[in-house]
Structures are given as C-alpha cells and as structure tokens.
Length: 287
Image 1: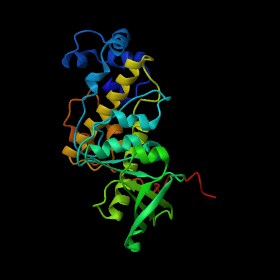
Image 2: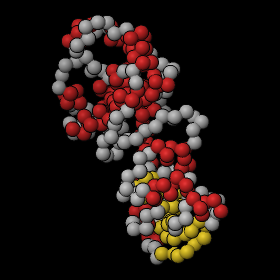
Image 3: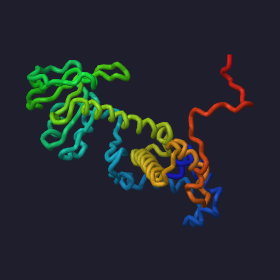
Image 4: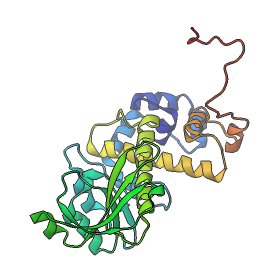
C-alpha cells in the first residue's frame, strides 16, 4: 500500500500488475509468492487500521487525526482530543463550543480561536496595545448569553487584529492572558499550516480514490498515506535534501526497485520553479 502511494497506482489490479512485473526483485525483498489483489483486498478489509494509527511525533506533523463521516460536526472532535496542560490548541470558528472549550480551560490547557460575529458579551477592561504590530484592541470580556455564561463562566480575552498582508480584520478569543496579543495572532496564523498539510496530502497522495469501500479499507489507505508523508519528510530532513517534498516523492516514484544510495537519486536536481524556457523552446503564450 505504501508502494501504491509512492508510485501513484490507481487500483488493486494496478498494484498487482506492477508488482508482478518485478518477480526477481520482489523475491530479494522477501516476497516468496505473487502479490495478488485478492490478498490486498482481504488485508484492507480485515487488518485493523489502528496499527497505522499510532503516530505521535513532536514537530509540525500530526499527533492526532480523526477520520469521520461527513455528518459529524466539527466541534464534536474536541471531545476526542487529549487535553494536555500548558499546551495551546488553535482552532477555527467551527470549533467554538464554550462548554467544550471550558473543558480545555479546566485541564490547564489554552485555546486560541476566532470569535463568531454574533457572540453576546460585554467588555470588562481594555489593555494597552502596540498598533504597529497589527493589534487594534486587546480586551478582557465576559459572556452574556444565558447558556454560554453558564458553560464558560470565566473571563475571556478578545483581540482585534488587522493582517497587514491581506488587510483583513480578525477577532480572536483565548483564555491565555500571559502572551502578547501579537503572539496570539501569530499562533492563529500558524493554524494555516494544518490546512496546507491536508491540502498537500490530497493533492500528492492517493486518498481521492479508494482501493476499498469499507470503513476499515478507507481508514487504512488514509493512515498509510499519512505514514508515507511522515517517512518522506523524515528522510528528506535527515539527508538534507533541498528539493521540495513534491519533487522528492516524484523522484522516489521512478526508483522503487533500484538498489542505490537514496541521496544519489537527488544529485544535481534543480528544483527551481522559475526556470527560464530554453532558447529553442516555443512559448505557447506569446502574443
């Protein structure tokens, strides 16, 4: 299944055909019998997807992923996340549920999220701000809604911020009163890396079309895709390869059965995206 991810195979039949074309090399890798698609299908159906799930590495890679049906509300996922005292959890507005956010507060954890436009509250105190950082206001507030006041009785911090790059004005909510307001805004901006990660996974690995239709098969494929991503990122970092992760996987895809030093496959790679057209190359977009 990892081979299928790295070489962009489209189906179990595709996997079977490609592996079957290299019997001698498969034998040297420990495969004593032909790899049949029925065997792969059985494994996808019967081998518990949780064996791929145990992934908890520190750094800008996932430590928690939950695969749900499309009917599950975003805020419900907060119940599944282990609360770690001192950690900061950054979410978008879809996860604003004050009862659930209060559980994080009670656990000694911090959260940073976007405020909804219809939030009912009153200002208790305004803190001085440095507007050169993009921070417009830094306030201590209390919730006024009948239910929200009961669900989150403590004070909250409301920060209004203007992004100088886009000109967009954002309002953040947090229970962290110690960090500078500009740091809170910067933390929320880092959340975009999560969006980019999943966008990259969807664009570069095989999770748009599935090899099996059962829940176990789908989760197996998703988790193996994540594992391939993590392994590729680790190897790329360990070997100090400057090529992008996209280029890295593209090159791996044409070397699956070659026994060479991995670094040699990337020797002399020019990964610049702004390469000029050759002198003999026609430009289709010339007027």
